[in-house]
Length: 128
Image (cartoon, rainbow, N blue to C red; front, side, top):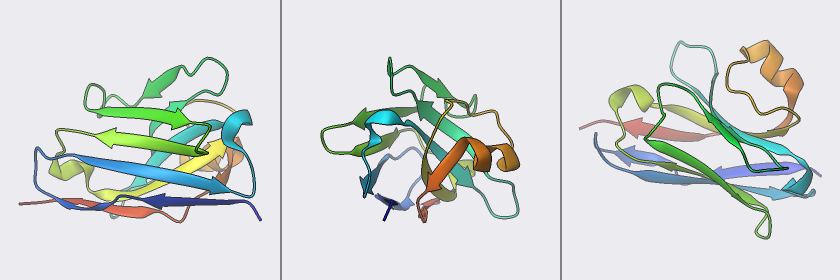
C-alpha cells in the first residue's frame, strides 16, 4: 500500500522554525517529483515547494522564497521542508505529495492530476 506520512508540525512563535518530514512506504520516492502544499482555513490548497527527481531542481512559491527549503533523501525515502522565519500567514495544514511535474503554480484541481499520492497532512500554527 502506497503511503506518505508527514510529521514535524506544531505550534511555533513568529520568527521561529520548524522542519517537516514526509516518509514514504510501499514505494520508492526515487522516481517521483516531490512537493509540499498547504491549505489555510477557508482557502484553496496552494503549492509551497517542489523538488525534481532527476536534477533535484527546486521551485518555491513567492511567499516562502528565502525562508523555506525543500530537500529529499532518497536513501531514507523521505522529503523534508525546513521552514525558517515563520509568519502567522504560514499557518495551515501542510501536505506532501509525490507526482510527475515540479510546479507550485497549479490550482488544486490540477494538483490532484499531477500529484497522485498524498499524505494526510500536518498542522502548522504560527502564533504568539
